[in-house]
Image (cartoon, rainbow, N blue to C red; front, side):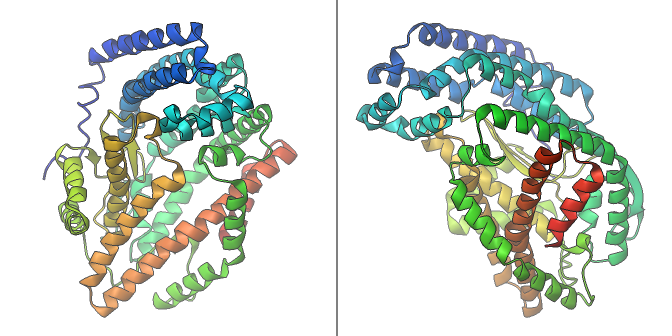
Length: 489
């Protein structure tokens, strides 16, 4: 089998690559040149020609450097491969601190631009010479209403790690180190980490998934106190920042960054919440088809017992390539590049991050996918989903200015969902009637999770923030009660 872990040499050849230091020097050099020019010359705040020059240089900065992102990206990916590696954690922290310093020095440019008078904003937004940057400027001006002073923004940037990111990484790394003895889907006694246990929850054998659920709960219970403190610290940090930025609700900042109106989100949440019975009816039908009176919560994603086909990684890759090629050969070509250039980390491993994601850095850098493939059909669809993200960003690299390279969450999920659906459609076409029923039930399962369960999670988070802001602290039992109530819906 071909290499199934990341080849990160396009970023750096190793954790001690001398190119890391030279890259930092280049980042500093380019940043200092930009800072020296536009910190002293404020003409870009009033003159269109000057602003066009400044934005062109800023776009180049975002494409090739952007606050030492290459080094941060490299060590972030390395840590995803082994969350227990303390040397990588140290190097990542050093890279982040350096990046924050550069970011603080560069921040004057966007902060001053965001806060120009409304009359000048209108003038820039009507200037045809700035057409390429109109959308960027429009969003920047909207954010300006919640942007603090340069000094305050620098403080918030510096404290973002210890106030939020470090808490998340701590809990994640603690969970990644845990392993227990359990039965695998072949009923063999094995040592399994949390990632593998989560996979076992989808086993067609009830004894396997029930035991896996018990073991998962044992692990999570062990760290309930840690998670309680983590969540309360993050909730408090969020409340402080929302107050400073004058956001009236906890999700307002997210809506602004996602470029979506809060009223639209509220309508979506209310509409889906009103129809939770659709999900309840689906799970009742699924339980009936599985020969059970009801499903346990941890059984909600179990495939129907007839879907026993295995999809080893080479087979899954070929299936996806065929589907994408039928849509457009360019999609298959891009997928082949991910595989041949070893930009997919495929299998579960001890210490490796769980789940799956597509990691896109700067426009000038490679895109990487993380999977935890275990030969299930769901793993095929997950791979198709993440490749959808990868294709989206690969195509964006060809045509989008760096300033627009990142997509809002709502936009980013379109390509991934479509690619997943096309692969499932391809499989369904070649299936017999029983398998078609099972596949369509699996598709419904995914849609129920994507639509109804995500809204239930949204409702949970909303109440979590409300309760914290009302009481000042929420203990683990209270958090669990809120979670259970919303998941029960």
